[in-house]
Amino acid sequence: MTITEEIVNTDTHKGILGDMAPLISRVRAFLAERQDRIDIRRASADGRALKEQFGFTGRKAGSPQVILASDTAVELGHPSTASQALVLLTFQPDLVEAGRITVAGPDFDRMDAGGPHPFGQIVMLAIDDARVPDPFEIDNTQYLMHRLPGYMVRSVPGRLWARVGRAARRAGMTLDTLGSALISAYREEFEGVLAAEVLFITSSREDVEALNIVSTEAQILAGRHKKLVLGIDGDVECAELACETCEEKPVCDDLRDIVIKRRKTRQ
Image (tube, rainbow, N blue to C red; front, side):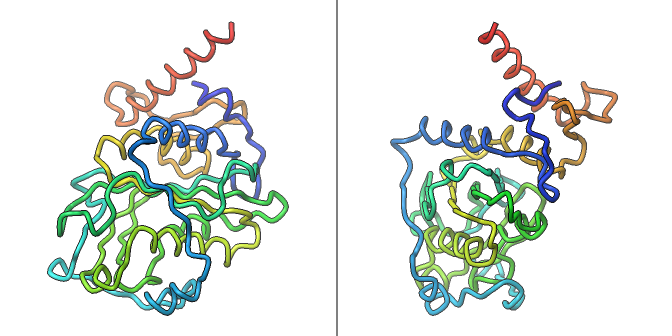
């Protein structure tokens, strides 16, 4: 099964298997369908404000923290609801708008206390193909582990389960804060990152799950999917013998439909 005819660039860049430009284009299409329900913001240009107001620290410089349920203002991406955490890399700088933060759904101050609330976080990075950062560090940075006091993350591959503390929300922590912290982390700590952009989805389970296929394809291209592997010829290879009982069957069926439709339009 061919993943898509656009995603067959299997040149290896220090562990990154392919340019994810087509996936970024699909995220753009997702936003275009919801353009009347999104809010576009800009990351804080002053990284010192993040440090002074919220205590944002450099990589591996923060301290572990625990936010108890009684101290939680907002819970995001709990396993009982939808969650996505993606980092999409491209070697085409014009596909990423530097410093842009897009919010689809309510911010923390408009969410009911507690939760759980669905949560999607998509980081889009333009990478210099001559200075490709370490893929593990690129992936790990999206969780801001121990770096932002008042924000606690439990990372699960492909998911992001987070808590925002009551004190942090009272101090003004918003999705702008998270987006600015992410963009600052990638731009300041990785020489190979030319531009960084972030999308947050808090609108509904359905909106978060609408990017399931993008998530699966990103995992395949990054070589991190537990079952599916991108072959040299652009085919998706799978060791699962019983397709009818495989949990990935709906995703595979959707991918197959996409390929069939595109082939028909090109005939």
